[in-house]
Length: 89
Image 1: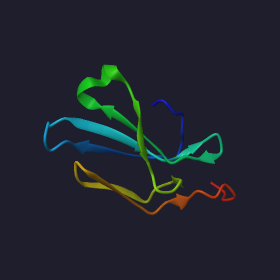
Image 2: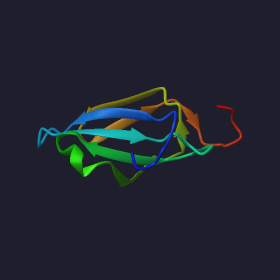
Image 3: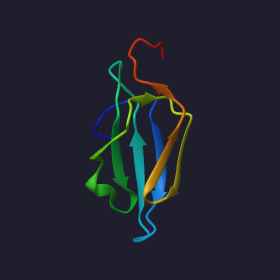
């Protein structure tokens, strides 16, 4: 990953058009700060490495409850701890 982090969520998404697979890493804790960034790895072209996407979570979230994809266009994030840095992790 391009950003070291802990307590993130990850999901493998199958692209329905190309058949390719992408691993997404969402949110997490970086240096005691909750992040809303999303990184992606194309499983078929791992030599390209991780890409920090322009996509951001609508809120800073850590320790997700569930991360699920119904199709290749949507990732649902349910639960987790939202980004006030006053919380204990």
